[in-house]
Image 1 (spheres, helix red, strand yellow):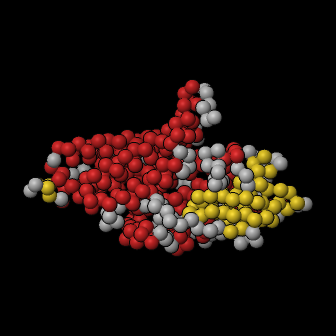
Image 2: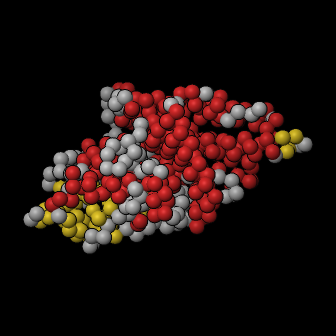
Image 3: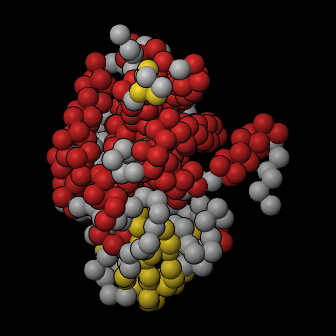
Length: 388
């Protein structure tokens, strides 16, 4: 009998019963609520974000690895497995959850005041409020320290002016975590999106992450009370800690897209006849499938190792860079190779492979480009920073 790729590595033997139960619950949700609609969402470049957020919140998936405030408090590994299953559906679905839980919610949970946490986290965990995370700017992606968005004190208030770009969930968010330059260094602000001067026009004509809301944030003299600022954290330590959380989810998530592509390619190859015998019976096809399964399994073993390190409190950001660089790079290679097995059928939305491949082009460059992660690893190996 044919074996699914992960069975060759006995992945389930490395997971606890609770982790398997969480994974299977997310997989069932994806199969029932997302997969039947993904081709249409992708083609129409739309997603029912609010409806999905409420359903995901009902399952306890939003901020699931955080403690308190209505969050599930699961292990980091369980969160990673959930990301894998969500991205096996679509990178846009996983991005909705990652931005909500690992960027917006984590920022408030880690750096917010008690009042900020009480106001926002329970509603966000339930999916009743959606959050976004404003760090990247039109001219400052890999170099966030150069951001031009500025917050100026005006008595007891703050006034924010600037633009943020490529912001997932921006146009549907109820709250934005916005990072800005101040006279005290970079600081974070909790910005209700109904504040006068705040707008979030959606970015159109995307070829990737079409089943996801991507926006610009425009802050036109947005006046906030003094209580809107994160009370303690200053500098890039705040936003970079959030990005490390989100990258961890990508380490697992990208493998979900790759697994889905590979499973579809195997099924197609077994059913498709070429010269009167199954495509799967040809040596070149089996060589492709074997090589891709090997890289997928190696990526999963790396992800699980990083998950265990994170659960033990011993995961370093450099190690997250290892996982993100390897697993996204291999996932996009697997998607492209799977497309060759399907031939012309691989470019249609009847199958998910081209959709995954296009999405992974975005995953390759967001939360740190491959080049930045190479330099992070290079710095760890040599002690020399080569960013400039």
